[in-house]
Image 1 (cartoon, rainbow, N blue to C red):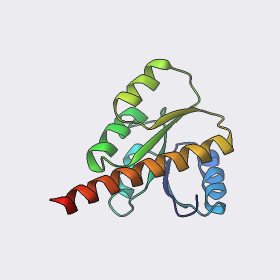
Image 2 (image 1 turned 120 degrees about the vertical axis):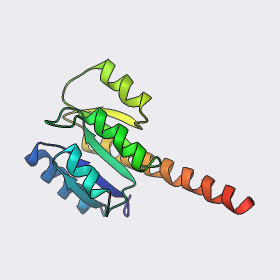
Image 3 (image 1 turned 90 degrees about the horizontal axis):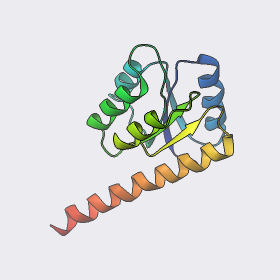
Image 4 (image 1 turned 60 degrees about the vertical axis):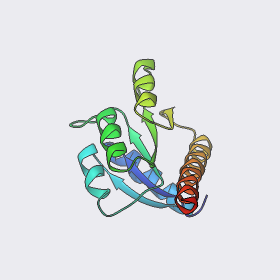
Length: 136
């Protein structure tokens, strides 16, 4: 799990700071953004393996941010977080390329497994692209 680069996007400062510290203690590199707009700025200088993305935020919401993240970096995996149960949002997120969808409050161990799975999936896609490039 150590070495996973995570971009944590959530407008709730307390949640974001606490989760960022806990992930950092697990050896992950964590960058934090309080909005979708800030997340897109951070992508200019930081290439995460996984983005943890809150669905409900002021300004640019999570689904719009997801769409823009995927345009910038199609291989990045995104785990959507929400405190509001909505199958429509979950389905839309998955259609836009989200790796998975978790409800707040999220069980920390479950979140760690999701981050690891998402990171493995990203690495697998990168390896397939590299292998294809070398075979040509």
